[in-house]
Amino acid sequence: DGTVSATYPIYVSTVGINEISNTINCQIYPNPTSGLITVAINGSNSSLNLQLYDIVGKLIYEEKLLLKNQSITKNLDLSAYPKGIYFIKLSNKNTSKVERLILE
Image (cartoon, rainbow, N blue to C red; front, side, top):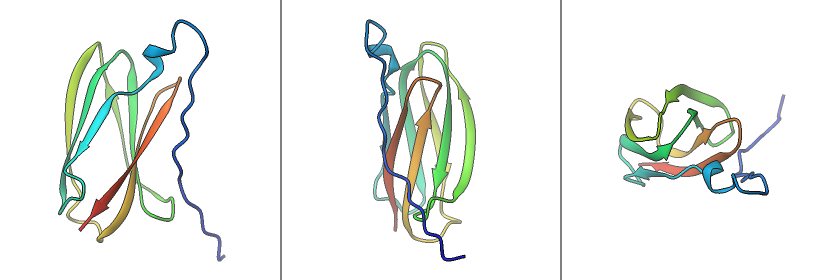
C-alpha cells in the first residue's frame, strides 16, 4: 500500500517523587553487532516488554521480562536477520526507551 512507518524514541515520565523509578537503565552491546547482542537491565522493579523492530517499524521479536529489583542480562541472536538498522524498545506501564542497533 506504499505506507512507510518508523519508530522514534519517546521518553515519558511523570512529574513528582516517582520520577527516578520511572526510568529504564539498560545497556545494549556490542553495537554495531554481527549477530549476538546482550541487553543488560539494571535494577528495575517491574516487568518489561522487550521488542525488536526493523527499520520500517515492523515488530519482529517480542518478549516479556519479569524483574524484581535485580539486574538481568538477556542474550539475543540476530544473525538470522538481514543486515541493517533495528530498534530495541524496552517499556513498562510508566515509560519506554528505544535504542538503535546496527546489524553488520
